[in-house]
Image 1 (tube, rainbow, N blue to C red):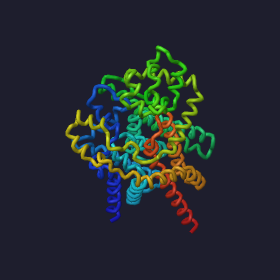
Image 2: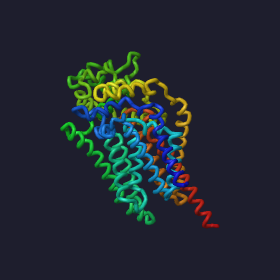
Image 3: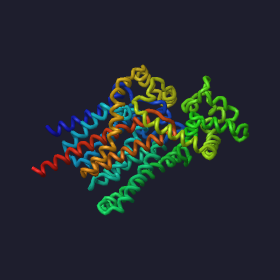
Image 4: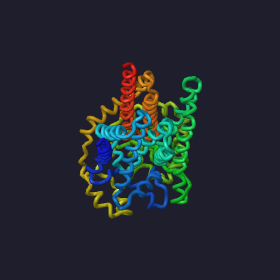
Length: 463
């Protein structure tokens, strides 16, 4: 009976993570989905669309409308939650199955995680890579080589899927390296420091392999050993939005070195406001496409970015701070999930026309989203869990629950780092922080259960 209860809880957890896709009648799509699907069909790397994640989707297509891909994404989450329970709560058997099922159900019910497990987009890979990296470094003793390899593959997938995730994982590796170095100066922590050092190396190796996977896959498919193109242009879009690009051109133009000088006025909207990041990148009439588009404009925009950093360091710092703070406050579910994804539809029409009828029949095309109601729960839960992390880390360390303390601190640093990277290097959007915020609730669950179990053990010893 206990085995049956555990199995049922895991099945319910899987269904909860797939719920948005089941509601939709088709895996959830995003503006960028088509760009990833196209990787196996086009003859050059996609701008801002990492080839490895495209291969992940195409490899799990199986003529089943990409359902295998989102099932695998959901199973990755369930497996990581289970490994967290093993590592930090020492659970086994039916208790572990019940906690994994119930915990995943809770995450799906009151955070936006299921909208990422059900979505054809690498946003989920950022969060799962963070959790897998922690478990690689801080996980349980005596785990099998197979589990270690699987955790490494999750890190590799995350690092290979987006350059922003690479920056986040690199920052977390450096954060743990600093903690380990500091621990060597404190005698009670030297054993932990020695034990964790080689594990940090395993995490760093997985990160390096994930980074290397990108140019290797581009070499294999397109004969181009290069990273995902377009990063300079994404960054320049924020400079347009913040007015730094306009300030630079006003000071430097006319200058034959910069084609953008001829289009200064078009960096503003008709009402006189600064053109925003998304408008500069994606509007067909944007100056970006008049000076060479994604392929031709990159060198010029990169040069303007570099020279503006030297010319206006104060403006860059102020803009970066504003973007970071704004990003910290954006955690709503549903950002960008609208009914019109014309590029994804076009890609399907070109390469997988058999998918178009189901894609068009999906509930998503009818603009029938429940996000307003969902965010009445998701937003306050997300902020409350995020705010509770440093408090729970402090209490966990004070009461001798170091594993839970390190986990909650790690997640808190990850959320802060993610807000900085995404806000500063791209542009503040709700989905950037929302895709990781479920880790905050998981951290709170683990810390509370760890503290409760520690108190129960103490009381039993006193009895």
